[in-house]
Image (cartoon, rainbow, N blue to C red; front, top):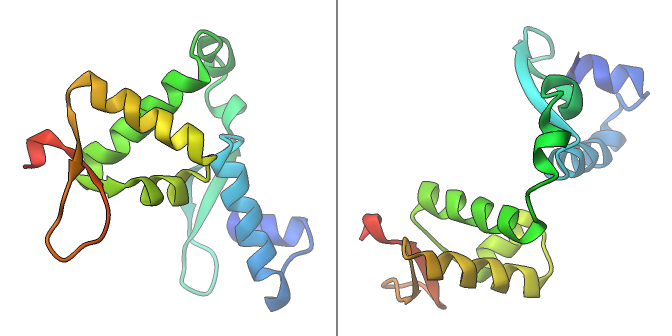
Length: 138
């Protein structure tokens, strides 16, 4: 495990020009479930930085347990959890968050609407487009 400050030092990305590539790489690694934040260190100019660890070391049984989960069901679960936490989102919001192909977002949204907890086609006053809403939020 390494905190952000020491990780940047270790990979020689400490100058301002490397801020964007470093942030982009962290996002990519987290989005693909390669790393995850596991703590906070008292380092950096603000007195804290996240500590990152490899997912397979933090959760050693995860690769074996995950083999039975299909990509489609995992995407559906992630969309379901997202909608449960934010209440409502458009397909564009979901696509922007997860960076999945459009057809995969459409499939995941279709799957969660058939479960019954999500309502499709909701209109929100002052907002454009079709919204997917967690029903208990209505």
